[in-house]
Length: 263
Image (tube, rainbow, N blue to C red; front, top):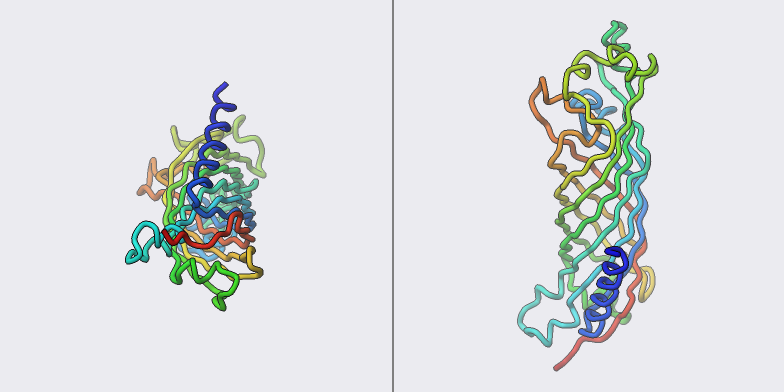
């Protein structure tokens, strides 16, 4: 019963915003993400950039530039801001140990190299985007402005599922095939979990057509959790929460472009 009520509330809310002459965009994006976690050697290039996956997202943008003159003709901040609501999905990502420890021919090195993780994540987020150039000038068809860089800050709620396997066998039958630090109590949190995070980023829009923009965006996402990868090495080491880097490309379509209100 809650789901239909929620959908109805969202529809009514959007229609109400349309009636108030706000401006709406929708966008679709694809890209790549790199997770920085307990997999791999900290500071190692392969560890930093090889544990990556494909990302997909859809977004709704709410902007205020056509309310500027009505609210306060001297306040230009409205002409630079958008609120972005986003659904973001990271596909099944393989996580491996890289670096000098995994290259060792010792028993510990073999266990480390044989260990493999996986991650799937669905996130809901809200971002505030600040555009360097006025949105009114960028969006209007007669404008000769084609680029509009932006900065973004937001929060996300993520639901994710982690997995763990080893080339040496079934770790659930014999946990000793894993590196020693992951055989300790509470060192593993495999399965479904949830986390909050903050996100900082930058990007730019390029005007392809009067109502279509090409978007490139790069973001840093910091989780308030050390178990995004399913591992919690902090039980014997200094705690370092997981984080990721995400780069995406996409298209944004202006739904209800309109001229500013002059009253």
